[in-house]
Length: 74
Image: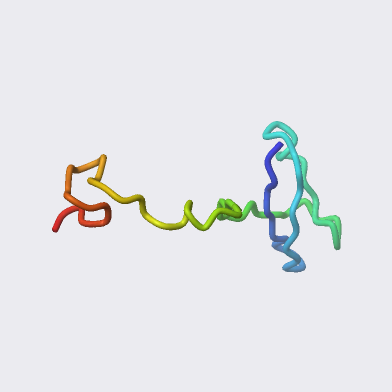
């Protein structure tokens, strides 16, 4: 199930809820119990342990055919 982030329009408290999309309609503020909450735009995060995953691969670009990765459009 996804994690949704909310902010209360009455007291300003920011909080997270793990909910199904169907249950997201009945959310109340965890501080003041107000139903006036706004769903915030969340940033997707990925974590990993491999440093190789963070560095570009050697060789030609598979998207544009440039001789090296990272040269797209040059």
